[in-house]
Amino acid sequence: MNDAISFILNSQTVSLDDFGPTDTLLDYLRLNRKLTGTKEGCAEGDCGACTVLVGRLIDGSLRYESVNACIRFIGSLHGTHVVTVEHLASKDGTLHPVQQAMVDYHGSQCGFCTPGFIMSLYGLWLSDEKPSRAAIEKALQGNLCRCTGYEPIVRAAEHVSSARPSALFDPLQRDRSEIVSRLWAIAQNGTITVAKGNERSIIPGSVTELAEILQQEPKATIVAGSTDVGLWVTKQMRALNPVVFINNLAELQTIAVDENTITIGAGVTYSQAFETIAARIPAFARLIDRIGGQQVRNMGTIGGNIANGSPIGDTPPALIALGATLTLRAANGPRTLSLEKYFIDYGKQDRLPGEFVEKVTIPLPKQGSHYAVYKISKRRDEDISALCAAFHLTLGEDNTVSDLRLAFGGMAGTPKRAANLEAALSGKPWTQATIDEVRDTLDEDFTPLTDWRATAAYRQLTAKNLLTRFFLETSGTPQEIKRFELQEA
Image 1 (cartoon, rainbow, N blue to C red):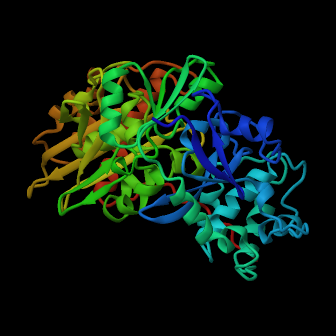
Image 2: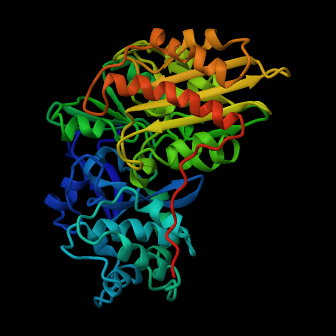
Image 3: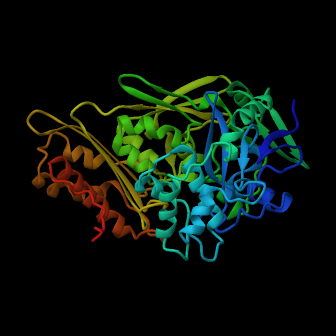
């Protein structure tokens, strides 16, 4: 059994054998390594001041992604390349083109958030030679600034896409093959357990080892992306022990597509799944684009969003409406159940001791069916849902409802189907008169709570109005709110 993790920090290989399971990358960078360009703003993955890049080998290729260091635990870093803002400029002090563009286009005022913006733009610069304005804004969804109004930052990003000196200048392009070799050299072989006092971080080497560990440690906290668990630590000050990190398990990062389904491993991040989902279920992909910022989507997993059982998790309503099934696994083998049956009550899921979410299988919408997902939140981007609604409708030849699944999040203690409303609509003509007649049936399905995100009355009325919106859209009346584009003179 190993007792240390290894990763590359900028240009140096690091081996750590003395850290706690909830020690964060941000604290390690600032307190242990004095790399203070990475800032702490919100400590919950919202503001992006702590953004760094983490490179990892996926199917043999090195992929760099922006992540939030404030909620990224050290135990998740084995076999990765961590890149901070200090690594960008050349040794003689010449700024990287991304940094220079921020200077030239006045993208910084107080400067506190600037390193995080630079790292997000650097990640985009590495992956997209000619990003559209939409791509730039998407890359910056997870970065907040109180000074510049963002336009100078966007202009800097637009300019730097064409400012590409020799690849020998950029450290990640120049040293790419060397980094890959070094990462292969520290690739994991078996389970790693790091102890600090009586606290333990466990990094299994395979899914089989994960099942064996959880059989012995059924109360261990499983961490994939830590986008939720990270806040248990930074905001609720919860002590977690032991913690089992699974983001390294390639067996849980598979995506399989056939004629009728998409099967997504529990360790697949939103970013990894996006392209596959966008090509086959565009409405679901649009929802994913509104989950957190880019850093959160690079860390968070669909499996984790399901596993934690939150009543306001974004993906469960969308998946329940599609009829998704969930595969759970334990040391004695897997079992499969309907996703909607996984959620039993608030804070209670149908997961036995020692079980973990292995994969979710998503039926593709059938030709001619209608599918839509609506997220209601105070901010359009990087915000938690007040409520989320997903509708999946198949009409008969006579325009009557032949099959209908309506799922809501934020309306009850669990993500839940509107069974009474579905029954009221079944076999009825799909008309405005029918919608007007049955929409109050939703009162029989849900009694939502009032909290700081929304009142109960707002949630109930909005859920009914979303049904009306879905009817209008399926009847040829587009209701999507279009972005107003300012036309230059």
